[in-house]
Length: 476
Image (cartoon, rainbow, N blue to C red):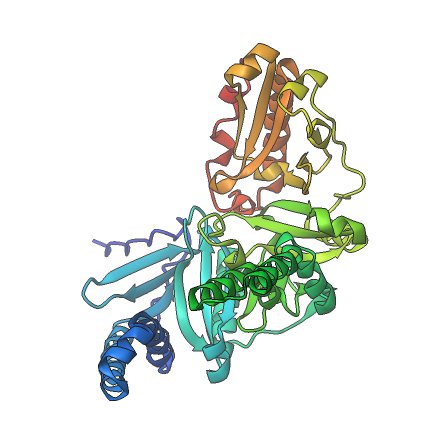
């Protein structure tokens, strides 16, 4: 009898050759020191100045030295138990000390790979890879740390395998060719000015003036008052400063394969590659204080990004931190071909919706553009969102009790990860018609976006999108 065929891996399509088993690789030998340095910083901060004053400098130094030794030993043992390798179209990662974990990440679910370099990594020539996958509530299996070259090569290989292009599958050490077409080079001066034009920055002088007047009038100033004032000032300035450090030297480009290449950061540099077919939506925001200079910022929504769970300053969704309308139009056209920010058909809800939005009705709107579903909202901060039809996962028509009295309904167009756009407070009949049109356009767009081998990889790696929730949702 012929020998039995070897079992296929979870991410191996039928008919493909058996996955190639390659040796498991370790992270860089300096990884334990970097992890240990971060852990030691947290420990020292937790001990506080009060502990130092109680035990004295000598004993405090002994405590820190013992803690450092323990952290380093623990990190080294963890590093010895951590490894990764690529098998077929899976990335397999093994880690854990007391509880061993073995994870297999199907690369068909891979949305983007981000290369981050915190300050310590920059000083040692290392980098961290963070994987974003479909349905991930947080960043999946960050690989920290690798050399910059190894991280860049592995990123290209994973993205190539995720796109079913086997060119790099047999060449794990192949160098990456940096052929890119620049799109946007951020202006650091505009970035600083934009963060000065925020409510926190504008209200800070008022707060300082008030505290100073109190000191002058009362003639006393306690330690608690000084400490609380400094803490409040630092808290107010922290968010604008973080945004400046995060978006410093922003660069946007298209690489040789047509993907978006995004780079930014000062203290922590970030380099991200996003395939355009993974983009779920593009959002444009006009903050109130920016509109005098004609500025706005753009954000990108990619399925699998850990955006909703992370703080705003840690999210990986930058498309244009600050820029004028002409620049934003050019960027949107590159990401969503055929979409012009100045030529989007948007109509307002009916007049009776004013009972629900007495001051902001004229800022609400929705429309069907040739390339996607468009919604807008916001009275003080204007926002606009564009969702390509091929990214629609489900359509919902929702009515609240007040909406039923007014004959209104809201149409939700959901994308991967539960995010999407909403046409709020439309006429009930219009809402059902709009939902039916969205379902029909989404179905046609998904068929047109299907890759040649018949699998809907362009839709974020989910094979059952076309069957999820369209028809039942559009029937009253």
